[in-house]
Length: 597
Image (tube, rainbow, N blue to C red):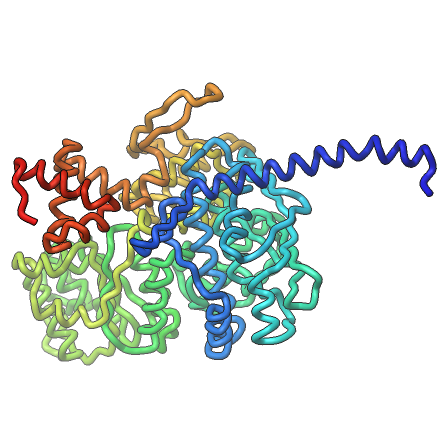
C-alpha cells in the first residue's frame, strides 16, 4: 500500500501528466484535421486527391509481392536504391505542397509529414525527440520510433530476417519531405529496424552535410547511377558526403562535378545514358542552354568502351565560319596564308575516342555537308591536303534548339539530322526538376566555400522560397553562378539571403500579401510553390486569359460536357457533378428557352 506521501506526490503529478497527454492529443487532432481538410474522395470521377495531387489506394499485399520480385530481379542494393528514390519523390511532392500552404510555419509543416504517412497506412510515428530546425544556421534534428512499419513487416514475410534496415520507401519519403520543407538536404538514417529483429524501427534525421560516416551506398539514390565507381575518400573536418560521393564518381571524368539529382527527369536521362554508353551509337543531346549536356556526354564517355581514349569537345558556335573546316579536319602546311605548319583537326585528335559537337545547329551549311561525309565514310582530308585519313570516332552532338524546326527552315541539312538523331536524349530544364535544387545548392555551396575559404551558415527561408519560385532560364549553370556570387557577397559566418543570390539582374515574380490573423504578412500569390505545381491553377490562369467572364466559362464547361456526353443531359450532369435539372436549366438558358431533349 502506498504511503500517504507517495499518494500525495502521485496526485500532484497526475494533473501535469494528464495535461501533457491532452496537449499531445490536441496536436494530433490538429494535424489530422489539417490532412482531412485537403483530402478529397471522388469515386464517380475515379479520383482521390491530397493537397491538390492525385493519389491511389493500393493493395499492400500486391505491393509487397512487387517488392519481392524487384529484389529477386535487381538484388537488394538495386531495389533499395529504386524504392528509396520512389519514396523521396513522394515526400518531396508532399513537402512542396504543404510548405506552400503556410510558408511561415515550418514547424507545423514538418509535423504534418509523419501524419501524412500515417494516414496513408505506412507506419505509426512516435517522437523520441521531435523535429527541430534552425533556418539561420541550417541545423536540423529529429529522432523517431516507427511502429507497425508496413515495409519492414513485408520484408520479414517475403524475404526473411534482414542484415540491414528495410524501410526504404519510408526513409526516402522522410528525406524528400524534410528537404522540400526546410530547403536543406536532410538525411534520415534507420538505426533500428523490425526487419532486423528489433522491437521497432528507429530513425534519426540530420542535414546531409552533418553526417560524417555515410557510405556511398547509403546516398546512392541521390545520384542517378554509379557511372564511375571509386572508393569513398577518407573523412576530414567539414566533410560533405554528397560532394565527396560525386567527386569520387568523377575520378575518371573531368567536368563530372555537379552531376547529381533525384528527380524523375534527371534519372530518366541518366538511365538512357547508361543504356547507350556501352554501344557505339551516335547520340544527340537536346535541351536548353545550361542543363548539363556536356556533363552528361562526359559521363557517357567515362563508362563507354572508349573511356581510355580521348574525348574532344568543340563548340560549333564559337568558331568563325571560315575556320570551321580547319578546326574540324585539320590543315596542311601552306594551305592558306598563315598556315606555316601542319595541324591535326578535332576528328583526328579524337581518333579512337569520342568527338562532342556542341551547338551543332550553328555549323554553316557547307561544313554540315563535310561533317556528314566524315561520319558516313569514316575518313577525312585536311584542308589543303590530298591524303585520305581513316578515323574511328564516336559522334556525340548537342543542340539547344529543335533541329527539326531548323531543318524545315532550310538551316540544317536533312541528311545530317538523320545521321545525328540515332539516339536522341532530351534533358529537361531545371524548372521541371526542382527537387534537384537543394542537392545542387548543397554541392555548389560546399565547392565555393572551400574555394574561397569562407564559412557560410546556409540559406535563409526567404532565399529558399526565392529559389523555389524562380524559373531558371539559365538552368544548372545559372544556379551555380548564383551560389558562387552569394558566397562572395555574404558575410563570413553569416547566411545567404535573397539579395546575395539575385544580385545579377534576375527577375523574380512579384508576390502579393494580405494581413493574416496574427498580424503577419501572408503571401497570396506570385511566390507560391502550389502555383508552380498545381495543374488546376495553371489551367485556371490560362482560361482566364482567353475567357475573362465567369458566365462565359460556365457556358464553355456546359457545352463541352454536352459534347462529351453526346447530348445526354444525365451523362453531362455526372461530368459536371450537378443534378440533371441544373444542367437542363443552363442549357435552356443558353438556347433562349428552347430545348430539344
